[in-house]
Length: 339
Image (cartoon, rainbow, N blue to C red):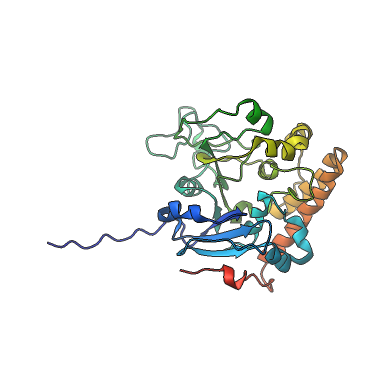
């Protein structure tokens, strides 16, 4: 007796989510992830030489933007988008197709995290109280058990730990092989080093603050792009895990000024306060830019340049995402593939 074929399940957040990938090379690796990602829309931000053709496997729905597209769409405001650095990925956050959608750069756990509240105001000693087999512990206030909307879901990875260059150099063979199946909320106001490699966020809640700063070509610092964004947000984030590799000698060249500057930047973020009149993410971010310029600008002139770029970023965000006439967003005709 023949049986009817099973119905194909609709992926979570299928029409609300863009997968953003910054790259300088072909994306053949997507074949390994086809079962997970094929039904989602990709925004690919090509870094480096815009004349190089990036190969994307057939069957994926994507838009590809290179530096020429960035300059064409943003005009003079393109100066806020980093070049020759993974910080260019925030251009993908800027041009996402659905202004109320969610952005992702990881796996299914991120979906669950973004759809589940966070316990940002009170730490639960059984970690995530909303997952099966867990709950709120004795003494957790009932008035806080509804939690808060999750704005960002963040993870690390297995294999090579996310160390800075000096630690990588003294521990070249160290590997993280222990998978921890746990989700926890970083308490509100607690700083942590965010990584953009394994990250998802709700664009409607936090999008304008997801700016990765000025890094890479022409800048005195690199590999602090994602951490800068995380410090600016000072938000609570659930954790999962992923994988990557990097060159510690190249990293040291990019990081060495940041290793010293972070000793000034972190106390700044621990003490900075914003006016109560800041009633939106954009207003908060502009106020923060002013504080960065006046306080961290004394550390190095780079921070004054960075503060100006933060303002330009908000201007670009409003230009692209506000109602009314917008710049032409179509990417290169020969670089767009539809299933």
